[in-house]
Length: 142
Length: 142
DNA sequence: AATCTTTTTGCAACAAAGTTGCATGTGATT
DNA sequence: AATCACATGCAACTTTGTTGCAAAAAGATT
Image (tube, rainbow over all chains, first blue to last red; front, side, top):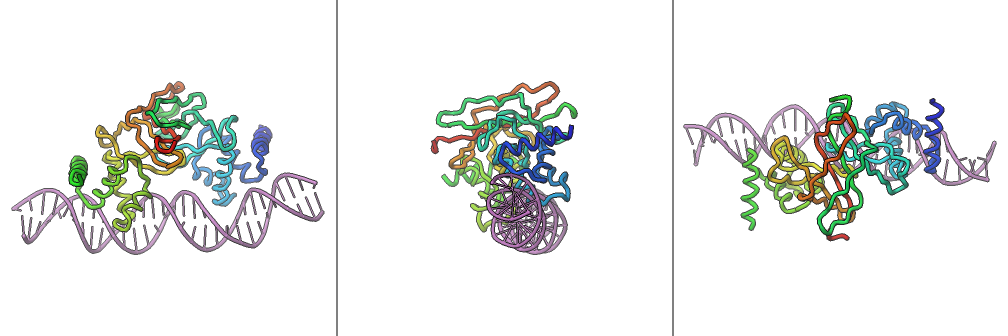
């Protein structure tokens, strides 16, 4: 079970031409275990003393650039990150699913099956990417 | 012309039971002049030496609470504010229009005529508010 | 217009969040 | 195992946001 996760982590890092280091493994593990999204602060707390603050910043930055994770805009303007689906490629994500944020427990959930609808824009606007965030109550909190 | 703006500013503040002060007038003026959205930093720069940083924070906070402005979540997780339409009431906005962010000039535009479509969520989720941000090229930059 | 009351502002000090340069340590390649 | 590139930790710093309190300005009252 744990070995499987290890292998999965290694594969993700290798696939993105990243060297397999302690912090990267740990942070990826955190993302794989939580099926929601994580704030920078969450990660810092959970890695505890193990890694420097700066390392966490740089690791997240690297993962973002490689398209391993994506960032989610939230209504209260905090920074959240979540794992991308497999078909995210470097630089150019199609992270086109809706994100749900529960106003009680604060969890952010990727609704991988709900794609962002495309809306008609006024003449002249050339859309490139659509992002959608829904707030409300999740299954557990309602 | 300038007098009209003055009057408009006064009216907005009065309507929201706020005393008419220098900083509030100036910051509202900035919003009225830019038809897009402003970051906190923009406002600080444009008000220059005139007001304290803290005052800008508190003024924006007050405007938010009164429903004069709303905040916009952006893909890069910066904080943006824009004027609400008239029908925004205290505490509870129906700020249900799509926001557009130009990736060239960086401007954020409220597409007041484009309402956020409601999507079907998985069973168990109780939606409360929908937010949508579209990035791409605006009229001027394409 | 002068006074009183309430609200707003500026200052200072602080806390939190994020960045940068550089020396050291570790993973990958041969 | 030796080398080399890359990742990490540390320190110092910048930027961003917050809090308490005294001074100042706005609004109300006479």
